[in-house]
Image (cartoon, rainbow, N blue to C red; front, side, top):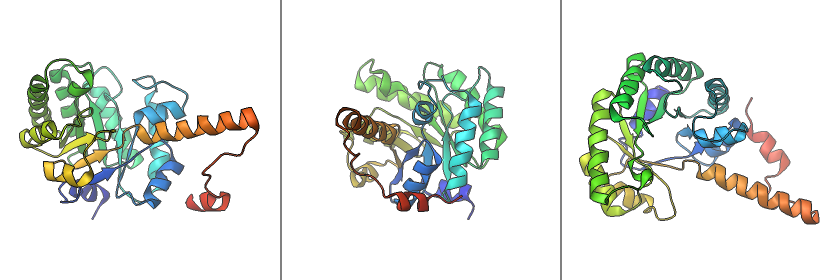
Length: 259
């Protein structure tokens, strides 16, 4: 089975796909060793690692370079977070997808953000025209905005999901939703795999699977955790000369990297 087919099959597996998000090759390798069946990238984590803010501030070339390094470091399928596709027109999205495929990734996340559903649908269609095998996960930010009643946001999410699916999306990603009743309503109303993002109040994986969720992403949480540990240990070293805690042994970490 190819990576593309394998990645697609993970979205219909009865077991919830726990998809961690990486931001560099070494981190991706650690995620694979930890048991990840597939890996996605995080635009936030890659941006931060490259000294840029998240939210379209990182240029496409540096994102593709990082993606290429991640794919080369692991043996599991990789999906790329391409934000809104990098560029103002659907043709730019198509070019981004060609670069993603050349890097060896088999899936993408593409988000609507501030774009209209119609605009986003055109961008999804452009991505689909490049490849029939690519798994396109369409992210809608309705629940991240926090405006309107829960019922209104469910209705708007389902409306957008139908538009994105018709344009060629395989799955729908709804970050910002953690309530079990809301998740169940979304899963029942979306014709395709539902992806949610982990949070402090997210139901445990078994319940998510029962609610109809296919995929749980870590988003930028692992990067945030890593940088929190770095700040904590740096402050300890700089204030008192203390050694960092919870280090991986040098030899163990060095041996993890397969060049």
